[in-house]
Amino acid sequence: MSNKNKSVMIFSGGMDSAAMLRMAQFNSGELHCITFDYGQRHKREIECAKIQIEHAKLVSFSHNFEDTEIYHKIIDVTFLKELITTSSLTNEEIDNPDVKDMVGEAQPVSYVPFRNQIFLSIACAHAESIGADTVYHGATQVDSLAGYWDGSEQFREQFQALIDLNRKEQIKLMCPLLAMDKKAIVEFGASSRVDYKYTYTCYSGDEIADVTTPSSSLRIKGFADAGYIDPQPYNQDLTEFWKENKCVPFPEEVFLSKEGTRGP
Image (cartoon, rainbow, N blue to C red; front, side, top):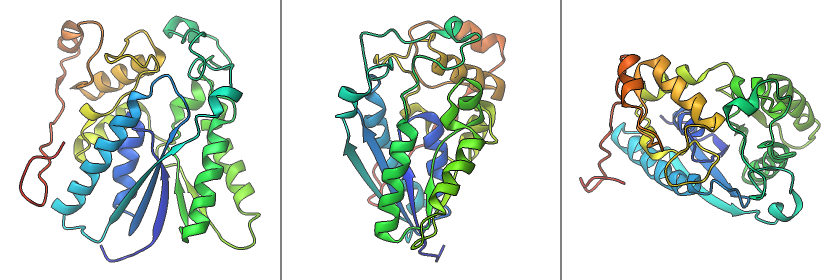
């Protein structure tokens, strides 16, 4: 890989962004990842983001993509927690929805008002300042179907139209997961050395993911549909569920550093 095009990526540390990280790193000369600490309840994803970045660097090395430079910044925007008080992700006095609460819900209580617009604006500002021509955002079709209007194709098109008003720099907003469901994302990870063991997909913020949250439920279904056992630990024993769905263990990667020692 010889191109030195620069890209910026919003990287949460969850399952979807881990898959997108692999897509982006193989299409960028320099990949600048931004993880936002906005006071979210599920802050454990930030620690997972750090591990995934180290894994990505080791994958680049093992595939001889040494000129793929990966940078990572964790940006403190915790002031948003004081301003956005209507979301269960920023206000712990509000209960997270469970699966049954999502039935017929136009917009779930876990929706963070204008979060994606805020993060994308910061990412685009950073992209322009470093001369990057692409910004990656991990929106999926599932987001839109679950009531998150700022994760839809229409949102991507409208935000791209806003970016296009920029007279100085042309930046393309890439959402490569928009046409993928959870099954496809799991399958991509299995074939592209994404270690989903070190991702976190649960809005509870607990050390062990809660199977009743919509995010966990969608993740579990995605793994089952793809025929794999989810390596993320849960607060219920899912052994029989995996057996019933004839699932096999997800491929575990051993990441070796340049010194030949095992990575995180």
